[in-house]
Each structure stands twice: as structure tokens, then as C-alpha cells.
Length: 348
Ligand code: NAI
Image (cartoon, rainbow, N blue to C red; front, side):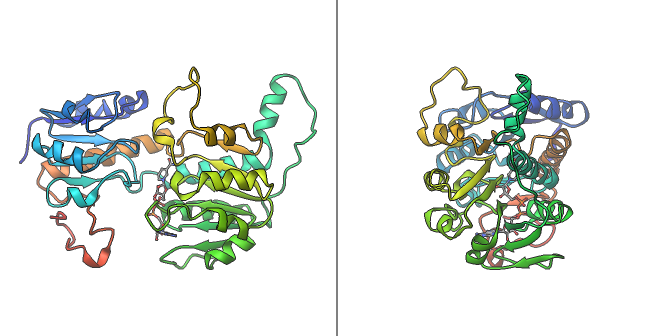
């Protein structure tokens, strides 16, 4: 299957994507067709004539899109991100290979989580705005030390562990919950009830699945300490946003640091400043003085973007070079007992 030129339909392309991906055309057979638009059933036809498609977190890769891509003879979808909850892996199985970038820079996301947490607990977002107007008053800027506080980390994979390392450096006590606990120095695994009850800060680093959807909802928030700070750099759907808003209004939740939002797909990554925001829950959250919201930018460092481009190219070149795809995904891989893949093989 070795090809002289590999044409890749690149959906939802942003200027920073061009900076990191276009140079690959000089050193590899990859040739990109960059589209501003997202991949949806309506736009899938743009990929006609291409050999592969490259997508991001908010592209729609459902059964309808997969059918359309297969009809065009496309046999590879590469995600330039880690999360893949937007892909119907079951519909893809046996028909079109899917690969992602599992670990481009766990530190980028973990550092963003800590940046948001520090901004919140030291009120940097307020102080920054004040001093720009020469307002040097300290009123309402009292924060609290992280040293000696308890952080509850949900999901202790690559990003969760990088975040734990940072928290350890801050002298925090670390509790954790994971479906598959590991041995991590200075970390005590507990059930979610104890994590909710004892944590001053709760940071989410597990994937979004049917099981984890709305794991932070009304019941969970009721079990938390008054004044808890909730940090979510993972996926918006982990939190029931209406329950979070209620928790903030009742003063139970002390602050929220959100890099992701359940209904972000039609809002994030775009300049909506000239529009009226239809999402009342999001608008109300943003209006809160103790909510910090960033637009899914945890991954956005030059180091991570370079690693993403390199790993994505590696996945494409492996497939078209008839080699096993390093980061192939299939719905069976998510259920390790049933994954038939042996080391150095494709999933099907
Ligand atoms: P990972 O796969 O290394 O770790 C995930 C951990 O969560 C694993 O230890 C797993 O056992 C655990 N887990 C799975 N289901 C769970 C559940 N129901 N409850 C508790 N733990 C559970 O993933 P990684 O690389 O650490 O990424 C974590 C998440 O971060 C991704 O799923 C993605 O959604 C998000 N992410 C966000 C980015 C951003 O820019 N904000 C960028 C990259 C990833």
C-alpha cells in the first residue's frame, strides 16, 4: 500500500494546526487539504479524493459519517487528540481504522489545571483586571494556601499523574479515585464518597463514558466539603452543569475552574463575542466571580502541538506503510479482555 502521496482531509483546521502540520509536507508524502469546517454528515463529502481524514474533538464521527467515508473508499480516521468520545468505534470496527494521539503532553493539560486552580485560589483573574485600571485595593482578594490542603484526583492516568506530581510539589495531601488503582507514592486511593467528603480541591482526569457522565451531579456535590474547588480539564460531560450552577449559587461550591463544558461543541474554539449566547447555564456560570472558564485550551502549548503533529503523522504513515498503527483504537480495545489485537498487529 506504499503511496507516493497521501492526501489527508483535515477538518476543523485552526491557524495553529497549519503551523504544526503544514511543514510535514516538506519531509513526508503527506499532503493536507485544510478545511475550516467541522466534519459532519453534511461536510463528509469534502473528503472525496482523499486517503484519510484528520479530525479533532468536536468533529462528528458517527455511523452516518463513517458510512459516507467508507463509500468514498477512505479507510483511516486519525484524531489529533486523546479523547475519542465523538467517534462511533463500533460502527467503524472492521471497516475503517481509527487512531488517536494518546499522550502528546500530559504535562500541558496538568499544568493548565494547576494554572486555573492557582488563578482561582489566589484571585489572579480579579487582580489582573484591577491593576490594569490602577485599582490597587486588596478588598475581596483573600485566597488560601494549597500547601496542607487535600486534593482529590479522579482518574490517575497520564494527566492525572502529572497533576499529582505538581500537587505533591505544592505540599498537598493527595486522595485519588480510579477504576483501576495503581501504586503511586504519597497517594491514597479511596472511594468517591470519601474523596468528595474530604477534598478541598477536586480535579477530574478520567475519560467521558456512559459510566462517568455527570459523575459530578447534585448527589456528589451534596457530599462535598463547603467551599470545594472543582477543576475540570477532562470532558464537560463529567459534570452536570446545572447542578454545578446550583452548587455555586447555594455557596456549597467555592469555585469552579472549567476548561471544558458539556455543550461546548457549538461554542468553543470560535469568536462568539459579537453574538448573544443562547446557553443560559454557560452564560450564568461565566458571570460568576468564582468561575474561571477557558475554551478547551489545556493542550495548547507549542510543545504539545509539535508532539500531536508528529504522532498523527506517525499513525498515518504506519497505516499506509503497511505497518501496525501505533495508536489504533477499536471498541474492543476499550474492553481489553475482548480485544483480539496482538502486539504489532492492526485491530482487524
Ligand atoms: P488516560 O487514559 O491516561 O487516563 C485515564 C484514567 O481514567 C485511567 O487511569 C482510567 O483507569 C481512569 N478511568 C476510566 N474510567 C474511569 C471512571 N469511570 N472513574 C474513574 N477513573 C476512570 O487518559 P489521560 O491522557 O490522562 O487523559 C484524561 C482525559 O483528559 C481524557 O479522557 C480527555 O478527555 C482529557 N483531555 C483533555 C485535554 C484538554 O485540552 N483539556 C487534552 C487531552 C485530554
